[in-house]
Amino acid sequence: MNATSYLTFTEEVREALQTGKPIVALETTIISHGMPYPQNIEMAKTVERIIRDNGAVPATIGIMNGKIKIGLNDEELEAFASNGHVEKVSRRDFPQLLASGQIGATTVAATMIGAALAGIRVFATGGIGGVHRDGETTMDVSADLTELAQTDVAVVCAGVKSILDIGRTLEYLETHGVPVVGYKTDEFPSFYSRESGFGVDFRIDTPEEAAVMLRTKWALGLKGGAVIANPVPEASAQKHSEMEDVIGQALREANERSITGKKVTPFLLGRIKELTGGSSLETNIALVYHNAEVAAKIAVALHAEA
Image 1 (cartoon, rainbow, N blue to C red):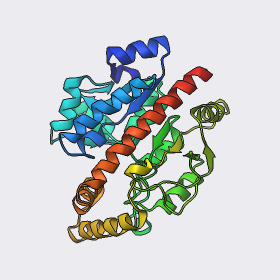
Image 2: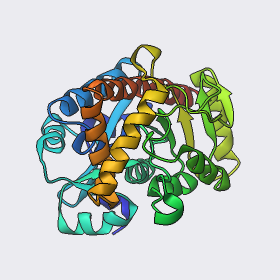
Image 3: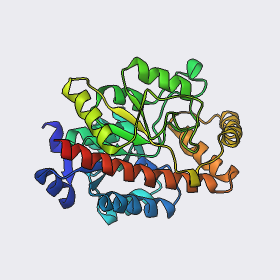
Image 4: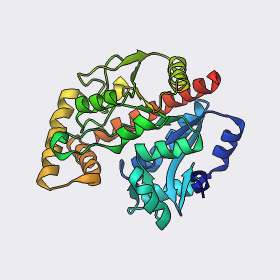
């Protein structure tokens, strides 16, 4: 068996691949581990609609019944949203999840792998993983970063999750040659906020500019993806200084409870939601919708460049 034998497609995605329509990949971890029910299923369906409305085809990726599903139907989306026992899947987890037939929600890294296997070059998410705060002692570095260094998929996101060490994350991406591009911004966004105090490698202002840059990168044989950093819309953004205080409190509580590994991010996101009275969840949803729109436009432009 080869890798593609593990892939299955919805009819919509299969037809898009056969006819050369632009496609945008979507992850399932944000559904299963990033938001509570029923906001997560409402978000997932709205994101797919936004992508269709902007001229592309959505391909939500997840693992079920020993297959990497490229595109999910309504029943499958509901399973990822409401099943409380969905495994979180990164690169290392593929063999076991596929072999065992378990249901697995793909992280940024895993979604990139699935997208690349299917021939999809653009992926919309909320925020990428990165180097955790205190990463110099814990060595907690997301596999999302190594995947960006080797897999040819552009990731449209609102920066890295602000619970992380943004400066060290950007240094890591620079070391591995991953372009960090600001979409209509000169400053790298920090997920909930439009600012972070860190710059981007360069700025682009249109989907067409993004498409030309990506096509040039890959034509040169420069392996790996790119981070398209797209700030949350101003109307939904949180104040950076206030969010830093909230995140600091949530991190202290995680340490006090000895929460580690893949349980850290879901705990922090849930606690931040509580500490902000639910406004952080509203911001999270708004930035995901914005990323879906921009990703669809870039996918359309990349298709036009072909």
